[in-house]
Length: 277
Image 1 (cartoon, one colour):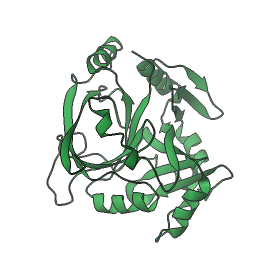
Image 2: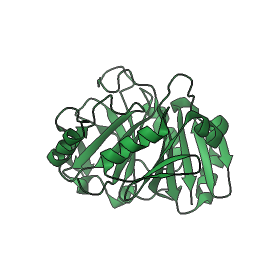
Image 3: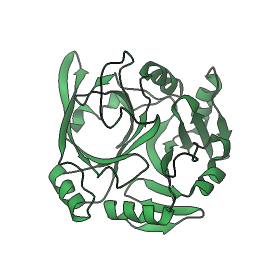
């Protein structure tokens, strides 16, 4: 398998897409028009240079169903890597004993310049019990030109990329090693955990104690789940742009301001977001 690269991270918001859209827009993300996925879910995307944030949910009217989301808790829910070839990726997963179902084709309509086109892709799922924190899978984009559009890549908060993804685990060393095997990457020790470095993003694996020490009152609860996706860190061109957006929000969100970072908790969706310059 070729060098691992992040495709996108996912926040699941249940059936509260209108509220989530308003919140992420207020935070300064420019979101794509609502997508209606062939899998049964709805979404909005915040597109960056080579990766993106997906806000995914189910319709608020109670319709729609998707087995991997129906009973999932809200929060950071998915970690997705790029695949150049779905079949090659699936064979890699087979070789390390972590394959799920064979590649699944999916699509959603995209309206561009008054015409409706179809964005298509193939998902290659990692076996559901291989990683406990959330959904882990690969995505082969068949029509990337319909997804990475320049009109959606500029954000009022200055975000240009996802820089780090934090995972909380009972045995950080083992979990980090499993991700390294999955992604053909090396593991390094950090000050408080283990880091798996892909070509473009760091995966930081922490114990619950280290996670609590790092994020304090902003951390997601770890008393009912020993493993979870704990935070998404975004790279921004200017932290002051993030602060302006936060200052304008009503009601305000729990925030921690550091010299080179701003950390925000979204209580309604049990998600922790970091912004670094």
